[in-house]
Length: 88
Length: 246
Image 1: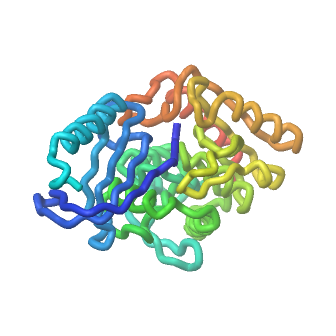
Image 2 (image 1 turned 45 degrees about the vertical axis):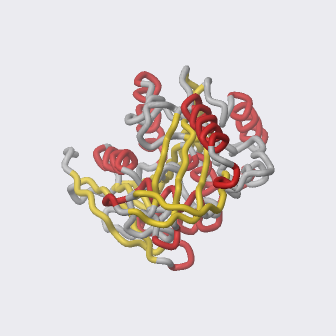
């Protein structure tokens, strides 16, 4: 299926992108749809982007649904493990 | 007719007169022939789509694929362009129609043109192929598993897509539909609804349904189904031979 559905969020941080260069990122698009590269019919895709720097300023992830859920849990676990005063 | 062909990138006048990039493949030789506009899928103006364009040239047609994401991402890699276009909400329907109109005009202006032009699209392009056939003077249209020709998109879709139910009575040319029985968008029920509407409106159509899911023509994806794709290609070749002959 083509889900078309896309969730977008603004964010602050950095990513390492094309040509090995770091850049400041400003938003992310998250969607469950056909991957470009992963060998699955559908994957959870995350584009961490800096649109002001052009379409190529992007770090892309294509994860199986199980992998995406595991990543969500890992992110939450890592945040929970950090002292609240540091991660607030 | 031989199997020699020439493929190149060209600039065409798209919606609103915008100059956009397109991939054009033409058989060698001077014989008159029909033209085919290939609408790429949501993942973009990619290598697999360009292979399809060349295949139509090998079948004897002038074929062209406009880069629907050129405005958002000129010169970008196809996957980056697709991501940028998706984040901006996708391709508006009116712009799509204008770009296909420009591509069809480019084909009809070629010295080899017999004046006939068909359109084909895959995935999101399947819906856009039907849309173009409802709005433009085309001679044949092929919908390969396009979602939301019928059926209702969820209201919270960030990408602005609506079904084409209100436009189907205006379909201007014969339609070939190729669908997978295991697909969810379009589901077999969506295809049934489309067939019912076309019948009620006296439209010429031909549907084939395969034991496959979505995307069975995509040779570089796990969804590829050889038997369905091979039969589908034969149906497409027969359909265009019928409606795009001089």
